[in-house]
Length: 105
Image (cartoon, rainbow, N blue to C red; front, side):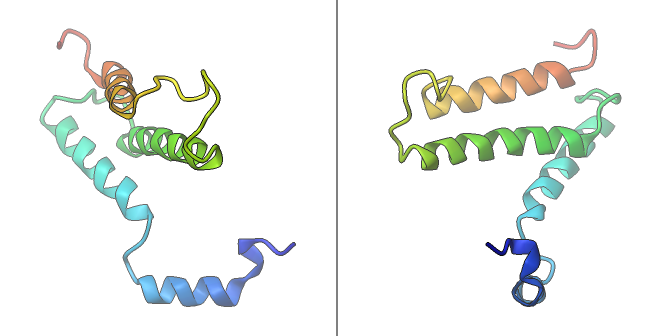
């Protein structure tokens, strides 16, 4: 089986067609937002905005992967929190608790 990396002609064509558009933009935009919040003192200066953006987006991609893998019928306990809204709220809460500077609530 030839992987994506082995198809340089196809990949090169797609990258040329995309130009500056592509999946990397989501992470870059979120990292830019977090950096702006960092400059305002609302996000800890001790974190890397790109790492934080990658963590958040990675969690969402993993959730989507599991949902697609199990065809929206995941076994009990696989998707926790179970509801999408609760997953989003908890994921953001956990990330923000780690980003909030000490002494700020």
